[in-house]
Structures are given as C-alpha cells and as structure tokens.
Image 1 (cartoon, rainbow, N blue to C red):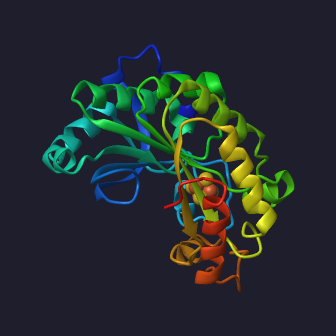
Image 2 (image 1 turned 90 degrees about the horizontal axis):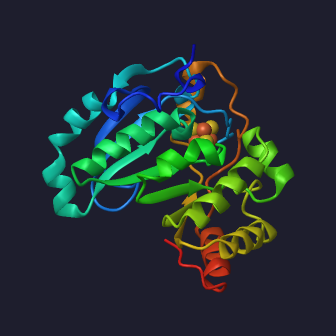
Length: 256
Ligand code: SF4
C-alpha cells in the first residue's frame, strides 16, 4: 500500500512516516534564507519540463520518520536562524503525503522553525488543511491558467490546483507564486494576462517568481528511459523574460 493511501492523522506527529527522495541541507532558492529542503517522493503531474522525474514514482525513495528528519535538521538550526531561513518541503508533490508533511511542520514549529510548502496544489482542501495549520509560506507552482494548455503541459487538469490556490488564499497563508516560462507553452501574452488575472483574484500573494525553462534535468529523462517531449525547445531569451516581467509589474504584481 502507498503511504498516501491511508491516513496518519491519528499517529503522533513525530512518528509519522514518509517516503523521502532526498534532502538538501543548505537550499537557497526555495523560500527565504538558508533552508533545509526535503524532497518527497511521488507526483501525479507529468510536466514536460520536469527536472525531477526520478521523484514521480510513489513507491520510490526511502521511508523516514518525522523525528528522524527533525533530528537531522537540528544540526543546521544556527544557519537557518542566522539567515531567516527554515524548512521547505518539496518534491515530487508533497501534498500526496499530506499527513506526513503536517506532522513534520508541526514538529518544526515546536522548535521555532519557519515552514514552507512548495506544491503544485494537486490536493483536495480537506487533505491540505492539516498541513496549512502549520505552514508559514506556500510556494505555489502555477503551470498554466488555460485549461487545455495546462493539460497538454502537465497531463492533468488545473481545476484541483486552482481550487487549492483559492483555499490557501482564503486560509490566509502568504503565497509566493512560481511560474515556469516555457517558449511556446506558457510564454504567450494571453497566458501571462490570465496569470495576472488569477493572481489578482487571490489575497496573500507576496510575489510571483518567474522561472525560465532550462535543460538541466533533461539527462534524468534519458537515464530513466522516458522520452523527452520538449526536444528542440530552448530556454526563453532575455527579451521574453523582460516582456513577461513588464506585463505583470504593469498590473501591480511584484515579480522576482
Ligand atoms: S509538479 Fe513538479 S515534480 Fe511533478 S511533474 Fe511537475 S515539475 Fe515534476
């Protein structure tokens, strides 16, 4: 049975078990300050540009307890505290193991650690709520606002993600929106306007992070024997990033 298929909410937070792909003890790009970043196993999206396809399989990774990860994280507390950092859980898609993440964040809060959830939002509100109870920041990946383009880009509808976005917004947790700019897939002026419209419909959005598509994870697809379908797509040129940034800032959105 997969860990995501049964509830652990009745298990004490420290004893919950999750499937962990890897840990980065000094992450600098997934939230404020220096961060202890936990990559969880499992994702139901199939983003064409994914640079972590080795996290997709829900049966992969290794089983670890919340207590075990907290113990490992303790060694880095001085760096986190000195830089205003904390703990980030990413993946894969962490909300597939929502009860585990809820436990991990609960225990992190007990020792005063800031918690950030990096998610594609593919989870029902009732699954996500126990996580948000202990989340200080949501890094929400919005892939595409156009439903058909989203399905073509990720293999999934965007309705669940958009519902999660509204739920998190109403919850009141600060949001950083992440948007990957892929030439021909998410860089059209109308794509950016749709993103701006949706962002402006949310409250709590502190910034939009524009991430240019890159090829750094492509070799993993080859290793795993999965066909890479963005063959020939190059990273966006600087002028495209400038144009998109301008489109958003003109709408009063803070872009980083
Ligand atoms: S949501 Fe993230 S981990 Fe999942 S396929 Fe997309 S980029 Fe990869």
